[in-house]
Image 1 (spheres, rainbow, N blue to C red):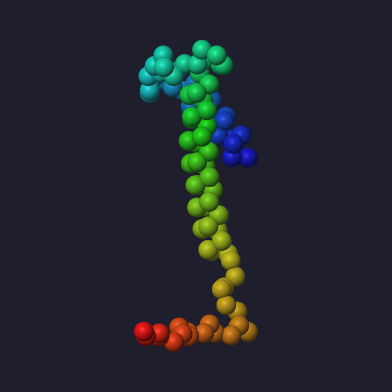
Image 2 (image 1 turned 180 degrees about the vertical axis):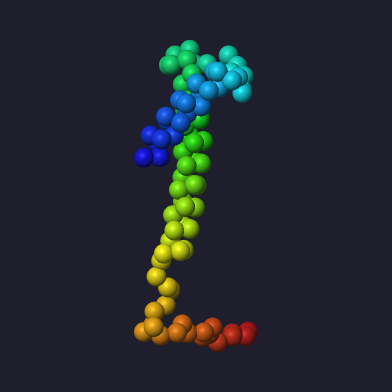
Length: 89
């Protein structure tokens, strides 16, 4: 789901960049072999994939923190605080 959303988001951002000229596209960024703007769209897709993954992860962590069961139930034994014996040489 994230790669598909990222690709379509990259297409939308690319079209908006053509309209509003946020960033200038240099001739070095244009691919002579594949689609002319392949590198730009691939880079935008990767950046959006990372951002969407981070947002979805933070959202799921927040939901888990709110709705998850407690760590220890009423029938659990308390954790042992034993650290072990100190060794001296």
